[in-house]
Image 1 (cartoon, chains in turn yellow, cyan):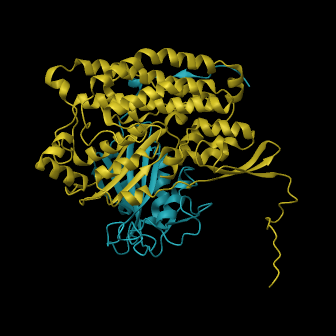
Image 2 (tube, one colour):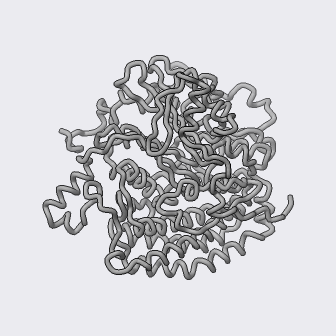
Image 3 (cartoon, chains in turn cyan, blue):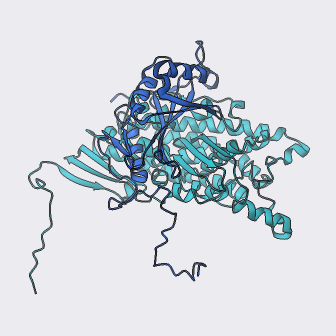
Length: 409
Length: 189
């Protein structure tokens, strides 16, 4: 038996050095997701940090090359799972762009209702988590019941809550029922006072302001260079919003403003998100009013006429042979897509979510690339936190709205 | 730390209209690029309203720099960078695709550079766009494009030990050599 000497191998110079290496993550309560940062600390100050990503990489782009259009929708659910419906609709809009499908106005407005509800639930999570990370748990618990209400509306429309797989190419799987509208009315009625109270808890809260003002800031110029989009870019003062720059789903019919900040710090990001929730509420009210204007037959329109890509009614699939065959054909991609190359983007919860789709005319995409906003802007994290305190870096991480599912694809 | 409320309201929907000067059209972009680069930028195409073109891979930085610096073109936002594998095009198996956006004029363009899969060397855009850093790492990770001059070109989403580039078309989705799955149980017996 030979004798082994077991030594822990330390990197050269690690005993002598004056800084401490700290692994923040990959699984740590403060990271709210699977993120690893290897930080060099001098006391509590960050000297440098290196981010490691990819812990939940699921090869969506590779899988998508073997999947017909409808089988890709569930993949998009799992990108930014705090606002799955926006991802679903972004994907359906991409397909519609390739296929040349025009959606009726009522479908657009229904989509906008779902997308703005998602935006609210996304911002709600992000902002309340910023609160949690600064030591204020109440806001988080208080607003959760309204995210629940939003999820109940999803449930009425598509049957699921988090990974929604909502909608179809050309519209929705079914018309919104009365329960959905009743719940929406309840939301529109009650949510403003809740959001107001949420703001009362935080916006002028001394501790919260001291923790967030001046931390994690970035200039507009650097933010653009780093490819920031969404609320994080707007917090620096750039009023770029996909809903306005490249309107989709008839966003041009709505009157809303783009809130912007100045310093791009944690506080500005928080304020921008809060204000965006107010704007989303206003869009929701406008959309609901527009929906109510459709009467009679018009009020029954919930999808475009695209029989080759729109799934037949579920009742028919279970009872009629023709419908069953079409359902199978569409799901299995027996209908070839047209050739083409499209880029379509939507304003996701945390920025510009883009789909770059290349079709060679087959049943599956030849190539599908997701432009995942937080993968791109997370690169700036070292620049945002270096020189600051470790505890501020945690707040910065949550205020950037990083979603591991989206980052790692 | 000053406690002033630095928050201001944006200008709203209609202020996003383009500035008074002549709008930047696809024709203008094409003319300017042809005037500057001649034959070196080619394959102009209007797909779904977006101007697309191609250049030789040696030119990618010169082109990006020109698009970035030119006062009128002003493509200063790199929306996306990714690669595509075309196994049926000998000598042009890999393409790197750039999506650029002029935010002020609100115009998007896309251009591609092609490379031989055996010498997939392409100049890095990370000096010009900080955002290109990780996007190029991802492209390297999945397609093996070697971005020359990149400060930290290593795998990003896959494990470091991986010895192939999984998004290339030669690798089928499922590893056909796997033995840990009972084919009978998976309906493939």
